Length: 391
Ligand SMILES: Cc1cc2nc3c(=O)[nH]c(=O)nc-3n(C[C@H](O)[C@H](O)[C@H](O)COP(=O)(O)OP(=O)(O)OC[C@H]3O[C@@H](n4cnc5c(N)ncnc54)[C@H](O)[C@@H]3O)c2cc1C
Image (cartoon, rainbow, N blue to C red; front, side, top):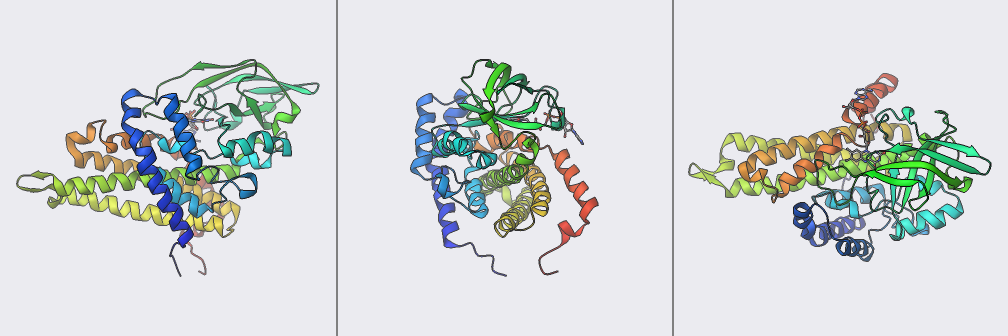
């Protein structure tokens, strides 16, 4: 069994590490202290993503992407996840379902999104719809050759930055016809209702949107009427892996900073790491990081080697659950090791500690991931999680 990473993968990892440290880290404090970055900085960051070749890492080369394997994407996302303020989000990952667009949609939405000249946000959640997406109330009523869309969407990440929305609505209000629509934000009837503040400082916003009699042609349906949930399945796997990799990166940065601090900080005449209370925290962090890294790389490898989609889906849930909860535990210890300094916003571990909290909520809460893992255990047995190849 050879677990060595290929040179090509290591090269992506090195480039991502350099990008995070030299392009993203320098903006962390400004973002934290001001709550946002100036337009000119955001534009410069967008250009830097292209210059450094990180545009469309999750899409094929024939549509302008980088054609990265899942392992390469994981290595990149791990490095980017070390940046605070979710600065990793400046590297766009155009939504996977866009691949299933018509030739016209690929030309008008997917390719410009990869190139960075357009940006999407995704609107599924509503005031009455969170974990249970079947509760979606936003409707798209067919009127001749048009759809008329009405509804309200919450927590739309990057909704301020995006110029179009991938909207989940039920055609004719029928829950059996969940459908994705491509809506240009400039369309009449689309407005931002509110821009709430959140626990984390995030490079973009998460506004709430209103859709009032928004009219679009049938050519704005992505992937077919009723295909909304099906289209998002593979996307969930990729998004959950991305979150897990970001969490791993955050935990590694915090662990390294805390370990370094524990060697330098002297109390009662010795470095605090010499106290077993601190040493045990560092030991737990090391073990948690090692276990998470092994699992993430395993699932990324499985995707690249064509392991059954349903198996990967279940394992991606297990992974997202484990990695996000691991990051919470590791960050909490990092803050503790820094003492009062761990509570200062100028300290990356303080910011990362807030940043990783949402990873237990979005893309399916921890409870929803447990429900998926539990259901898969019931259906396929314990071997899905305990087994190995060849056994
Ligand atoms: C910062 C941020 C950014 C976001 N970005 C986006 C975005 O870009 N687009 C988008 O569409 N959405 C986005 N979301 C929404 C996110 O996906 C939802 O918040 C999440 O799915 C949970 O839904 P909810 O908040 O309505 O909580 P609820 O579904 O109301 O859950 C509340 C609690 O009940 C628990 N619960 C619910 N059902 C079950 C169950 N069956 N078993 C056990 N426990 C259960 C949950 O785990 C949770 O603890 C974002 C959220 C945040 C906070």
